[in-house]
Length: 374
Image 1 (tube, rainbow, N blue to C red):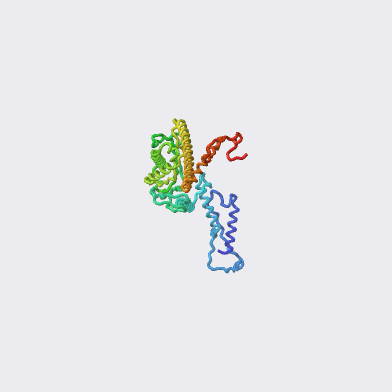
Image 2 (tube, helix red, strand yellow):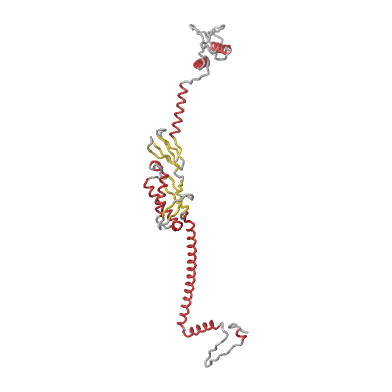
């Protein structure tokens, strides 16, 4: 196509564009295009205005809008008019029907979103992902990003294995009575802490995991209380009871393949029944007072024993000296004894060879302490 033909086609297009008063797409009911006037060959120079030599045997055909922009606008107008005719109310309507390519792309986008959302799974560090294929267990996903077949073929259930769960049995409002080993009744309340150790067993081996743990805890506690007395269960052996219940629960749950790990058991309350609680407190107070008297007596006995042992040690030392010099030690013991006895009397006995008389002391000397000088 020559340059003059392109210019003629552009002028024809602009004339059609501005000639229609209703817009660039023509009238609403006319689908036919106005005839296009064939472009006339340029006159003047034989070589044309742009220096192009004439071609012999050439047949000029009328221009039908084969240019790129004109052809695109023509197809767009025809498509818009067809959608208007197919809309509601006849004539040019406002209905829109997407073509097949748009539907395909929309379906492809939905399929890709479905594949990504159901095939890739993010597992937190405290979680495990249990994968089931058509309801049957196939694998367990570890922390990170796991890939499975899309849903509903594979389904992933995330289980928190680090979270410590609690079950409280018994309360202050309601009594939980158990029989002790000495035939008494105790009201007890306790708490069990546990977490999931094996997600596969936890999901598929037990129908009601928490209810099973509750019943196992009650059975283990009753067995432990039956082996202690009332006073031991109220405080003396409370720690031993907690450890025994934890071990027994773990043994039973492992036998069930429950996938549960018992973290600990804590007794929060251990009292007699409410009907006899006041009387039991009085008895306990009396027993505590009796025990206090017993402790005081034992302490005094220990003091006397220590004093006697000290005196025995001192006597052993004196006896050792006595064996070395019996006469000297005998006289020293005699003098010490007489000094201890006569220091509180008002008379003096003088023992001298050949003299045996009594000499009374004046009243002044009587009040003078032994060994003092006036």
